[in-house]
Length: 424
Image (cartoon, rainbow, N blue to C red; front, side, top):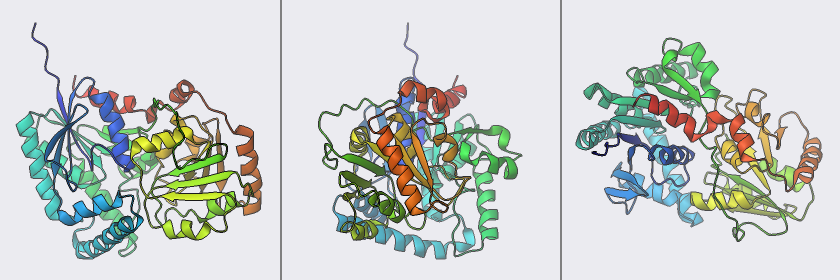
């Protein structure tokens, strides 16, 4: 009997295999589940040294070029050299600002020529490889433009936009009016998804879309970032950033002002006056100078690394004693890393600004979490209470099976289940 050919899925995303991008890491978790029953292709941005076509652990990766400047910036941001990383970060900032000014009339479209080239590239690859379904991951939003374009050309193709990040209910630029930005962004999002078979959004944006996207909402499915999965990480040796016999507190993720400022939590943990504390920040951004300036006065050891490959981050999280999450000012944006933290069952310290922070409803259900409202509690109060929490729960670990039952919508399986419905 002839073996039945697997159906083919093409994922449009930023990079594969994933590096430091939370969206790409989330999507990789989904891809690992998809490739069990489907043939998976990824269309990604070309980085310096990348081949146009390659196979990575059973996934067919197709690279396209956004341009040499973008390739350099992407390469530099992931480099261990701090000067190179900072140069790339500055170049990205300047390029973004200049581009934003020139594209005000067509906001929220920032790269019009690039997204058209991407759309035709996606169409070419879908026809060439007989693709059955396209999953367009936002960010970047250009992937959604390409997905919509191809769906109009190949009507029987399954098109699923996947909003791992908030888009219309996310952040807005300060250089144009909020009313203009809100109206344009919401309208563009509806247009990008008007021919989709299903739209996967984050639960944190559900109330927003129930208010502003009611006509489309029957095609929306609300899940969480699919970070929650059991990791087979054997801690034979401590990661070099960790220090054995000490309380290792680890934060992973981007640190960009004004959204995330590490100053408060550094001062708080320093006020514990515990010399056996090691506070480690891993991730790029524009806060490295802040962290460096606080090293001399920190009570304990303060460390910062711009970039680590994701497999190293998993080793770091597995060996840490306490995991750290920093809240953001946008209540609709959920920090997906909390679900990756939960995968390891470790105690989690979280700061937040507002009582409607999207992460709180999940952290309240997690048995080993302590949340700190940094706008209400004084530093002294927060210091005492957080230290009591850490000392009480040091060495404790929640069982993954229990966590998975509580947070099923945060698993890759929940996403794959929705995709599978359209490919039966």
